[in-house]
Structures are given as C-alpha cells and as structure tokens.
Image (cartoon, rainbow, N blue to C red; front, side, top):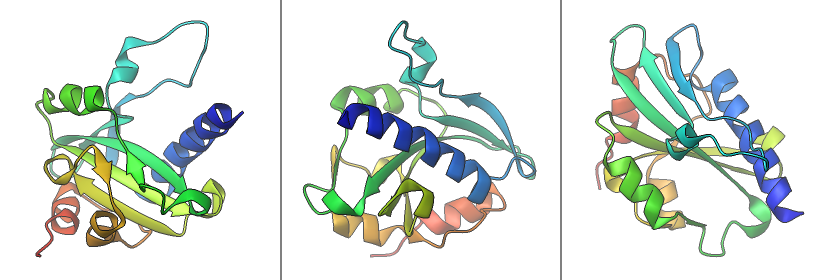
Length: 152
C-alpha cells in the first residue's frame, strides 16, 4: 500500500512542478517519465522525470522530482539509489533534483532545487535547507542557475 501511495504522490508532485514551477509557456517538454505500470517497464523511465528546453535561452536540462511528506521527513530525510546517480552522471545536460515537502502532495509547503553536483546518495535536511526556493515559477534557465548557485 505504501508503494502505491508513493507512486501516486510522485505523479501528483510531477504535475505540481509543471503547474507551479516550470510552466510550459516558458519551457518545451522534451521528455517526461511514464506513469507506473506493473505490466511493463518503459526504459526511458531510467532518466529523470522531465527533460526541458528553456524557450528563452535554448538550454536543455533535466529535472528529477521527489516529494517527502512531513510525517517521515526527519528520518534520514531522503535516500537515492546509487544506480540512479550513476545513470544521471552519464547525461550530457545538467540534472537538478527538485524536492517538495508538505503534509500532502496537494499542499506542498517547501521546495528545494539541488544541482546534481551538490547531491549525495543520502540527502539531509541541511542540504535541503541550503537550496530552498520560493514556490513560484522559474522563468528561464538563468534564473534556475541563480537559485542553485548558493554561497556557503
């Protein structure tokens, strides 16, 4: 049951990101992960959730979406599969993780967007806090870079 809930939350969070952060009027969606299906597996689901092209700058980048509800937010925060890191490292375009928290995925309260180079297999709250962003549209790739270039 928990796995199904996580799948549903993940798919709803991906929709939230499109509606509230990376608006299709500013970005072309070049690739998108497919909904979960236990009958077959789509190999492109090995990639991050979205591949975008910024219409203003023509820069292409990937976004991996993760949602963590507040009920279990402080237990190891988030762990990622090592195999996922290895696959993402091979991508030629930049990869960013966008992580949302809240009681329910329909009520996202906080967002953090972390560049791949700043990620580790285990994400702690301090790393999440370092890259916290407002829940708002990111108008272009340059703004994305500004938000993810944090000074210590």
